[in-house]
Length: 166
Image 1: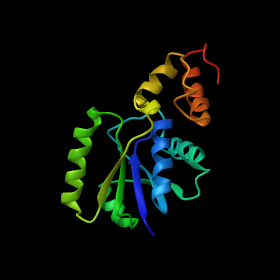
Image 2: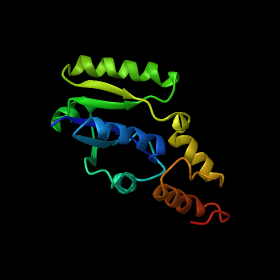
Image 3: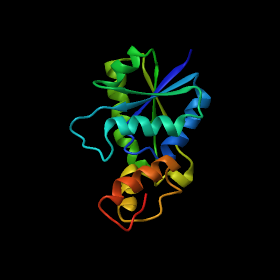
Image 4: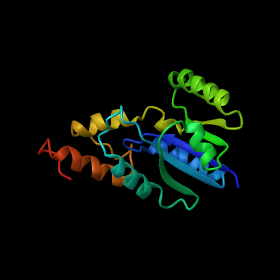
């Protein structure tokens, strides 16, 4: 079985992430979407909320499963018997960081490769950070995230902004 890991914080998952997941699911027998547990990075959504939202967003992909991990990504990849790490590249600005990470991961565990996938052009500018900011300010995010995320963001921000209704 050819298995790949697609790691990230997914706070929240966007249509760009989902496009990469879709592409990866056609290339590999199984794609493990692994939410990184990072104590230093406070997210808008709790860890459990992100897991639940991501599971809902990918439920129509039978060969995609959502998990979580702590520690080094390459160690986690070995633990789940994945030999490929999927990384999304939106723009040239992503490349330098991702290239360094791929080389470091290869140095740590040579048998795990990194595969870069680009989302569709219409998602190349979408980021979780921008989506959260637009939602916080009451803007329309429906073309950037799945419906479950639209609802979840409206619910989160309606507590602080009565103009926003869940």
